[in-house]
Structure formats: C-alpha cells, structure tokens
Length: 307
Image (cartoon, rainbow, N blue to C red; front, side, top):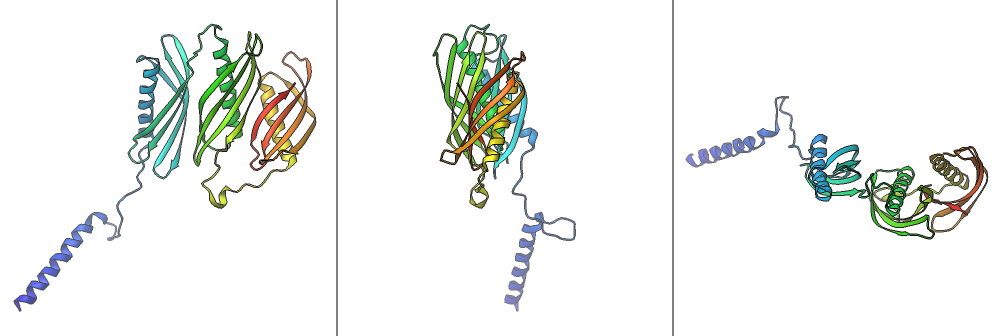
C-alpha cells in the first residue's frame, strides 16, 4: 500500500513539474498554446541608426573627425532570412570640401548588429576649381553609369566601383574605363564600363557598360526563367533608353527615322539606331547609335555613339 502511494505521489509531482514548464507559453485566452517567439526583427529605426553609426566611423577615418553627413536617400530590404541590406546616397563635408557619399550595410535582422559596412566617397570633392580634369571625368563617368544601371536593372541593388583607368587620346579628351560589382538580393554581378568625354568644358560624349557576370534575377528554380523579348520590344526599349539619355544633354524633338535589329549570340540583340533631333540651341542634328540589349530580360547593356 505504501509503495502504491509513493508511485501516485511521484506521478502527480511529475505532472505538476511538466505543467509548470509549459505555463510560460499560455495566456488568459482560454488556455490556448502559443509557442515562444523566434523570428523577431529589430525595429527599422534601430537598424538604420546602427548602420549610420558604423558609416560615420568609416567616413571620419577618411576625411576627418569633424565630418558632417547629410544621409540623403536610404533604401532598405531583407536580403536573406536573417539579414537586412541598407543602401544610402548622401553627402559628407569637412574642411570646406563636400564629397558625394554612397554607403551599404549588411545587418543582422534580429539584433541590429552591423555585419559589414562599405562606403564610397567621391574624393575629388566639389571645390577643385577645374584644376583636375581626370578626376572630373571619372566622377562624371561613374555618375552616368550609376544612372544607367538604376534605370535598366529592375531590382534593388548597390553598385561598388572596384577599379578605373583614364587615358588621354587627345589634349581635350578623356577615355575612362573600369569595372564595378553589383550586390543584389539574389546574388552578385559584375560589369565593365566605358566613357568618352571632352574637357574644358566637361562634356560626356558616350557612356555604356557590359555584363561580365549577370546579376541573378531570382533565387533559382522555375521563377528564374525569363522568356525572350521580340525584336520590336528590343527596338522600343533601346529607343526609350536613348531618348532619356539625349534629353539629359538638352536634345528635343527627338525622332528615330530608322532602326535595325539583329541577334548577336549570348542572349543579346544589337539595335542600330538613326536619330534626328534639335540640340539645346535648336540646331538640327542627325546621329547614329548602337544599342546592345539582353534578349532574355530586355535590359539595355550599353549604348554607344557611332562616329
């Protein structure tokens, strides 16, 4: 009898202990079970503030402790299950010099920890008084390549210029070439870029890029398939890209009297375009351009003027 009482008491104690362990997952809504939280994301403000703190450190290392930062535009997206990417574009000032600032942070979504932070500063500044045309040419080229990629690539990404080279084919001409990495949600890509400019005053004659490694457009599987575009669509996209480009130089009344399309392999099409327009001074011009476009996803790879 005593032995049975001991067994019953032991069983009752075990039930009480197990019930006590589970109490923290119940609340007062009728005893419903709620598992503990496991996918908590840190607040957006905390993620951005921690990123800014790290970027501020990197900027001060480069241009001095007294640097003041205007954070400008900030883009933020979840790049993986536990990671958030923050891209920003603003300005940094110190000692009377103003620099364009591009920054990128990889953040832990749970604890807002900065995994990595990269910055790109336009070290040529805005106050060189026209003394260094090479730096001006590099800056203008990078700005145009950044503009082209942002218009052509239909996903969130950041651009990191990795190298550049300047040559002088003539006294008042500059030829800028280089490479850049693209960091997107589904992986990384790489481009080579090429710009031709004139100086005194500075004028960009042509700018374009080509893919060395395409930027993935999805995480893989069936969703990564993209049907090819038609010749008509390729022509339309190249026309629109060129029209936007010419408007930046003050061209107006832009018409395309003739264009031809051909496949050139490696999922590419080439579009040769004849354009008629009026310049900023209302002088008539007729020019020829060559557009290369990805025949699978319709992205313009480069646009070159044919002399």
